[in-house]
Length: 518
Image 1 (cartoon, rainbow, N blue to C red):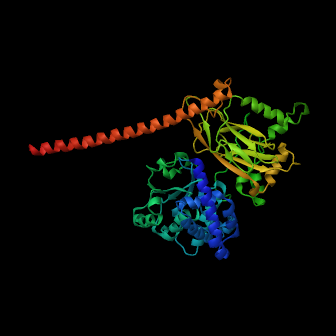
Image 2 (image 1 turned 45 degrees about the vertical axis):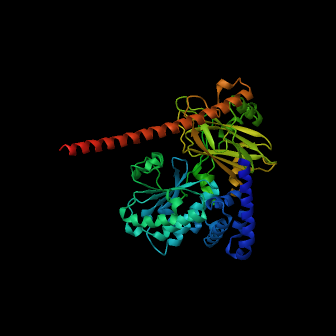
């Protein structure tokens, strides 16, 4: 079944490309950016996102591509940068990315009170929306986003239906499949009529994605740690520019404690001076290694270091899911599984496999560097080799589903050195378009038994086959537990509903007899 689905998807993608080239590009080539046309021929995920949004109907997908590509050229989306946006608009803080919802989706904040309807500035504001969405799309490649419409302190002069319609069209046509939901906070009653119009723009399928909330309901979708105080949250974040606001992935702790890093601020300034994005704030993770090299007799070779890591992962179950990137195969593909709080937070494993003919430099970063120890966090992988990376919570801190890990990788010249100094310089000079990035979510397994993806002392003496069987059994058990929990939840809900109906019926009967005899 899965193989048939993959074949059907491949056929639809191929047909879409062929027909778009023949029926649209030939006649309208001047209306499209050649870079978009080229990407359409190379990026399967991009084509699939349009097909998915049009229920795999190729004719409708072609119309959508045509509209989207014309818009992308009109707005010069591929060339949008900070310099394309007026500085005052970036400093205002009305539109930015920050934090995650409870499902792990990125939050796209639109602070409506900062928007004043003005025909002179509307185009710049639309470009700012496009700038953030394009920036996110290039990094995440299809992962959903949650729009946070913060309407607190909003007045009549902020009501701009043209701007709202543009935002909706971004997700309906220009960035299909990216919208997780739209959370509308504290909407004034005077805008009820306006949002009836908005619902008609969204269409019946997307209306369910609108979530109207107040301070009492907002935490159903976003936890307190990513909500500002005026929403009842504890997030101390305050918008400022520069630099661009985003979740900077930072270097976590090394295995033996904090890493003596370079000055993050100076690194950021250097990179901005080179025209690179602020995500590239580089920390020098290798200072402890440099101090070891001061004594030649105590130097440890890379091979010895890898052997030490291997010895620590002998009892670690290798994850089975694999993300197949152009430089590295990364396992697990999407989520890092950690143990429950009751059993103590366990270590988990990331396996990197170099699938190129060159040395690949890699480094691991996280949105919560104070929580985790990672070994190794910055190193290189030889052609065809695999490296195990151990990730463990630090100091008893709790793993959160909102935490993210970023694996960055880039090919190195065969003649390049792979020592700490060479790697540090390499990451400062490598072009951004040469860097492969892959993100991993964190997941806590609520079970007192250790998960097969963690370090397990109890299976250290088992054969690989026995371990594999145990892994499959545990997965089946976890799946069964989830189904039982769902059934129990539905049963409790049904019992509560039945009890409520019984109470209503009883009240009706008592009222009836009371009126009958009086």
